[in-house]
Amino acid sequence: MNCYETLFILKPTLTEEETAKQIDAVKASITEQDGEVVATNVMGARKLAYPIQKNERGYYTVVYHKSPASAIAEIERKLRYNEDALKFFTVKYATKREVAEFDRQVANCSPKKEESKEEASSEA
Image 1: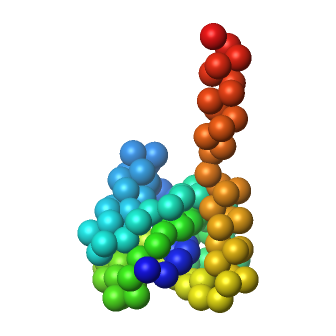
Image 2: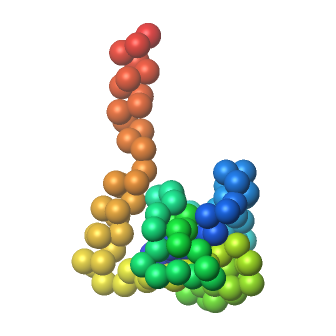
């Protein structure tokens, strides 16, 4: 299993429910291919560098996952046929230095479990 980062940009005209459904579909696609979703970074709506399909903005999402190499083709195939996805790409983390960076990025976007436990115990 290799470490990957899949970034995809959705149309800004989607509702919150539709956007959440699209993100869940990508996560489901990863798990169907025997992958493991490690973290998700929902960056929200941002201005695009250039218009894509007459859209000036897009809804950015990054999914960090550990998947077999054969799964990437299927994940990208599903994104390619998704009419709501404007752009997407996948980055593979291969070397020890890159995997360390992958772990750092996952730690930055994951909620701190220890902190939430400490806050709950201090409130009680």
